[in-house]
Image (cartoon, rainbow, N blue to C red; front, side, top):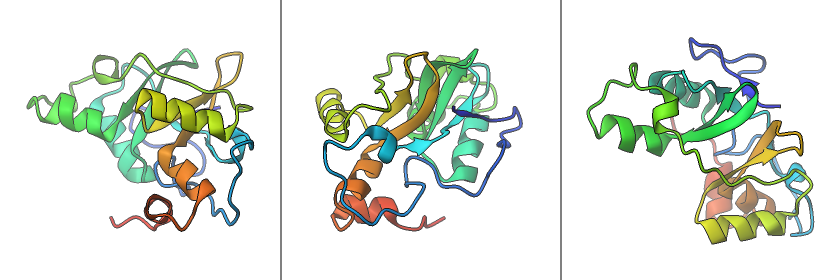
Length: 172
């Protein structure tokens, strides 16, 4: 289940874990394409409501060293907002990040994947849709994780340039 963030941008539960953009656990083996998304996803992605501000989302991203926040309405996927969305849709437009709501800037047409789908299927979707992240959603609509291009790179080939960058300690 997605980890809902409090209105102040403070997370619930473990705040020390790294998020989807950088990987949440060390991986030492190469994951075959037939393995499931559940094996490589970042569980419990950070989430906010559509009414939360872009500022709150930016703070959650900063505090958790991630590049995206899942937007949930009544515990169902409403959209996803990325650090790039905030830069392009808020800052570059000279809008006040505290006044802009996620409902107004998040991507609503979100491609998702089931947790039991193969890593190969995740790769296919990412290539086909030219996206960097896939929310992992159960049949009942519950968001249980997120798998990123970086997660796949680390799982498939830790020594590749993208795998190495994705697994590196953040330079904050």
